[in-house]
Length: 326
Image (cartoon, rainbow, N blue to C red; front, side, top):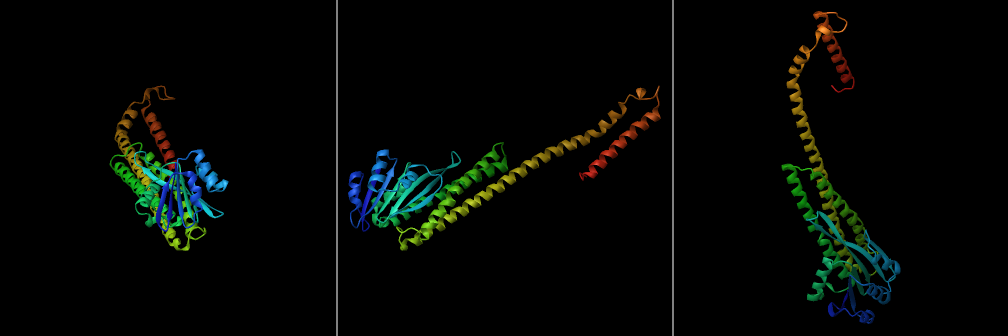
């Protein structure tokens, strides 16, 4: 579906889905155009991206294909940007990302996405209700879209923090066999999130440093504010990652403590049964059939048995002492 808005001096002149008229409007003087393409057909891709705007084939290829990482490229008269919206599903305990592609030129902005993007929907509502607030130029409109996109990162991290708190509470109360797997899964999700956010910060940093001409100098402070916002979110993600690492260490310590408690109980039971074992073993010996004796030889039998036991005990003690186990 193709939907576009035509602005002039902060006023919304026209909203339409008529693709052929878009080519005429693009060359009108004093107007800015925002084209939003959602779940397009191949024919719509060909008409808008190739025929009307004549974007570079490599940019179109990156736009249509799914990109795992954010990126930004400069072309003649415009630049192409790939960013990712983020949401956290508490039901599935994982982050979900939505790719958003943007072509930013002097008098146009083209947004392309296969799935609905929350920041796009909110921006369209604001354009329809109060266009003068956001629709002054493509670089300003891009700023509002990116600002709304980043605003949803913090709620996603807050949902993740709530999941972490629930797991930590259950871990301290009664850890289950799946607790460690749940913690490791959340840590993996944070790592996945960081793999998206770190290059996304680099993309916005390049825009904020004024590398791309369609972004006016007066808008650079706004993009630097986006950069600060994203850096703050990354710091939050790093804090959560360290917290999960500490939680894993606490869980392992708890499991080790439980193991030590079991070993302690077994050691006490073994110690308590030792006198009974010694007495029954000693009086269970068949002295009459002691080796190398034709009959009962009580002094020799007892002396041989006790001496051999003592020698073996000393030998074992020496081995343990040499290995520094005692």
